[in-house]
Amino acid sequence: MSDLVKVTIEGREVEVPRGTTILEAAKHAGVLIPHYCYHPSLPIAGVCRMCLVEVEGWPELAASCATTVAEGQVVHVSSAQARAARQGVLEFLLINHPLDCPICDQAGECELQDYVFQEGRSGTRYGAYAKRFNPVEDFGPDVLYVPNRCILCTRCVRFMEHVAGEEVLNVSERGDRAYIGIDTGHTLDHAWSGNVVDLCPVGSLISKDFLHKARAWDLDRTASVCPGCTQGCSVMLETRDNTVLRVKPRPNAEVNRHFICDYGRLNYDWLNRADRIEVPLVQENGRLVPADWDRAIERTADLLRSAKAPWVGLVSAGVSCEALEAAARLLKMGGGAGAFRVAEGEEAPLPGVPDLALRKERAPNVHGAVAAGFGRDWDRAVAEARHAGLVFVLDEDLKGVEALPSGVPLIYVGTVLPQAARGAAAVLPCANMAEEEGSFVNLRGKRQAYFQAKTPPGMARPAAWVLEEILAALGAGTGVAA
Ligand code: FES
Image 1 (tube, rainbow, N blue to C red):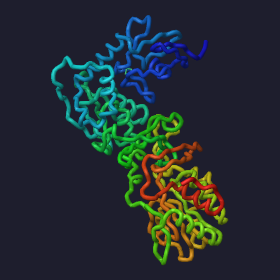
Image 2: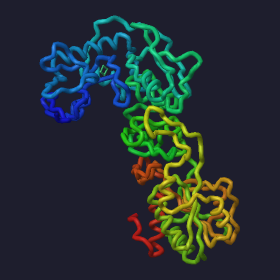
Image 3: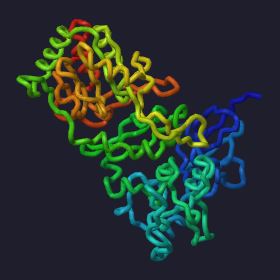
Image 4: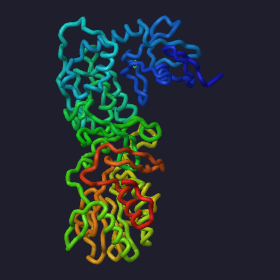
């Protein structure tokens, strides 16, 4: 028996592995069957009945999320019968759902709004909507619950029970009094609980952090990699007016499935820092003065040409592989090497997904730095820096590092100028990870690209560009076109 099953969905023939649900097979055929309770990373519940389709020869409509395909099956998603059934589901949902889209955070990305627009009735046969519950419940550090909007799909309940492994949510009461309850004495403070906000198809579970910040249609979305730890989760950076306003998970079956932890989700303010270095600075008469890029690169190259060996590098494990590789090449020219350090925190796994955790090492490119040849012997590198011919710093905040002796020239390439680098011979402003394209290597050795979501401030350029320009000025690289 073949492991593939041939089915026809909306007139399109597809072959899918045996055991695939009709809903997933339809995706292969390029057909989206409307659904609420189904989610590919959660156990199937089959409670919303929104995914009903007609299967030829069957006496009743089938819930496509819970029905597996069979050889030769012919499925109709948009037949009059299937549409009428889904229209009925939508009408029932709207009896108890307030039409508060103008003030709802989910507007523009609400699946109830979308499906009603797509195939709902144009009017209601019911009277005024009766509010049943308190307007808002505080569920946890970043989650609010608006029970009047809840369509009881139970995705949040299943996520907490089967994926987070902390069974704190439930369906309380029955019928039109049913709502999502939280166990007495508990809050939604699990390290991964913010995912319930993404899973909620309507505006019932919302993020406090994002509350009333922006409308969904005003946001630009850019594929990126979470800079929070070595896991390297795929994320979407959502920006408006050149500011990162929200971080959402981006599906990646090999790394994070559909989830990100709350640390990664909420730790983005630094991408919007206002105290950035905006122009190249060079030392003149004991002061740092602004310079254009040509002069700054030339001055830096002169410094490097005249610097004695060895050169020491103090680099960040938060910059791109491209910048780290160029920095390693540069340091090699001075017979030197470099090191990095990384902040550590508590590891927080997501039990329902193998090999997914908020990792202890809170920087995205520790493994890229190691691959580029940087060591973890930070203290030794700092000690050596005090006697080096030249010190090169790549976006390291130098916290706890004493200012270097006056005879040791310092070149600082970074986003923000730390106190310890105020005496640098040259300061070259670079973009942060949201402002450039680049790649990080995660803890499993997977190199993943991220893309530019906002523009860097002033004259700041990607660190890799800055380094390639320096290398080109020294005759050691091709340089990147300006
Ligand atoms: Fe199939 Fe809810 S998606 S019943």
